[in-house]
Length: 433
Image (cartoon, rainbow, N blue to C red; front, top):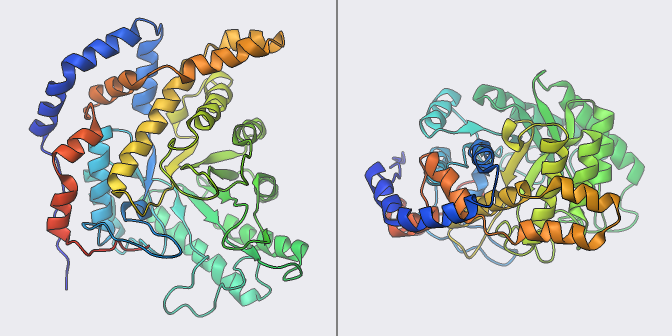
């Protein structure tokens, strides 16, 4: 049975009506903060420039090891996923890219998919390979690893999959490949650490050789899960080691949930920037591990400190806006109790707010305090920016780009989820999860 896509849109006049109902209060709040921000127009331009990619797997309700509760109205195919992200981007004007996961979202007709993405004002961000699952009809199993595997044929299968992902990406206009490996071990003695590393490196080298000249490879790391004794790309140091050995097109990718508890992620970011090997981010939040919670919902100050390092290391030292395209910015979240679209709106908003707060830091005063070992002043400078309510600045940037003053409010007011359930069904589970 062929599924007919019914694109969900909010009419322009409805968006304008929403903004008109809020404009008076917004103008008051914006003027209040703008009077205290000397470079407000520069900040607004940078916000308009910054885009966060949405992964194709984030449009459906996530789950746990115990259960998954579908929310209804979830996208049944790649086309509907693109349309859902197009709706998000129309509301917040900061979600102008989609990141595909293969084989969950294979673009069977690349020309059609590119056209649909363009119609929704979307570009294709990094492609994501999958060697952490066995797919239907797969010849060899990844139960004991993929690129690290002692069986050369299994390593070859993983290599060929990644090269195929690159080919899909070329057809769509993507320029990067993210490789996350679940390879590792659950018990001491299960594998030889050095052999596992060398097998993985040799496998990555074959994939790296297949990269087009204008592509990048992002090597993602994770401290544990699904393997619990060791992971073959377990931390930023191991990822950096791979990237350095692979070459100038290889970089480390930081997922905020892929660290051991209380890791100093902002310091990791700073050092990767110093080495020129920071490729990008998977944004989420966590309390215990890779919880994949809404960005900024648990540790907002940590997120601010990370953006503080990004602004200093990129915008100040290299005079390059964060949105210039040199880095990959993506949300990587999966939720079992929220409407996925509402969660994504919240996550993007948190990122834009935090970026704005980092732009407010008085860099000269901070450097002076650091050079004079004035610990108290340094702390006060950072916390002053973090405590500043910049939501009106973010809303103003969105308004100037043609978005909604309050994306979540209009999403709920227009009963988008109810309409999606009516069109797609109440028992639909998104493809690819």
